[in-house]
Image (cartoon, rainbow, N blue to C red; front, side, top):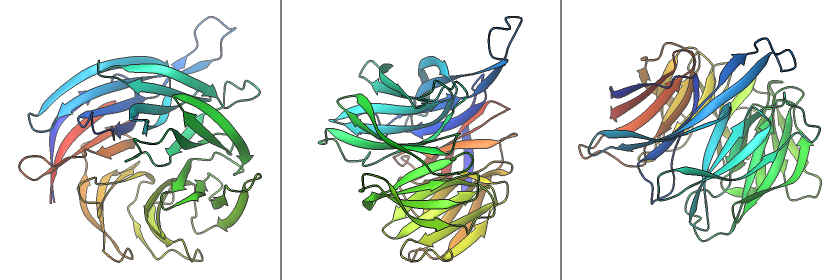
Length: 348
């Protein structure tokens, strides 16, 4: 596999989040979120540090190799984001370091417009971070009027929310982990199942149909914090962890993973290619971005390429939805302290 860097950008602030737009009207758009700790100055009434950030909206035409920065939003630090299609509207849901979930609408003027927000800290705790979010049915759901959202935070809490007519409502919150709940995800094939992963090394499975959310599985196959999930196919869940292993689980039998692959560096994100789902782009924090292939039976993983152009923590990663005219794919990656964003072509 050949990976060639097409563009390198300075994000000005540490970059940790990338998401390519899923709406068919905006196939060339993606966002980058940043996270910067701003030291307090002489005003001792303020906290010693502030977590500030930006959301950059880019447009990259893969066929013309044309890149344009469309919009920059100053906000609290952004830790995660997902695109969501509701009633054919293109929404960006962003998790902030001020315990907020922000809802933006991408309109035809190529700008992100804030339409709603919600604070997950019922006690006003400014130190609560919304760490991860996932949406249910974000692809191909243009005819739906409501969507579900799940969010995890730095207290180990998980919240189930609903988005309806651009408005976000919290339905329920529960304690999932003893320390940070680094990640959460819906099972894309079973709308009643939610996965959560925490710094306590546990992976939990919940049934959200009951008024009081019920834990059905408590899995301890990981030996460090659980950081990422990919609901890959029916009965197939792929996980990433600080323990450096990419794992495949059969959701009908949780005793042991079907297989695993050590990638080193700690796995922060797992993104399947939108053109060839067998290709998985993994952000291996302290090593690189790695591309793996999963086999047809979903019981084998193989490392097939490594991207080593970043010089600090590898966090954000995603794939473009379309192939280039010459048959290649495009991936985007970003890293933290070197404030670098790369757009690269990938040829199998």
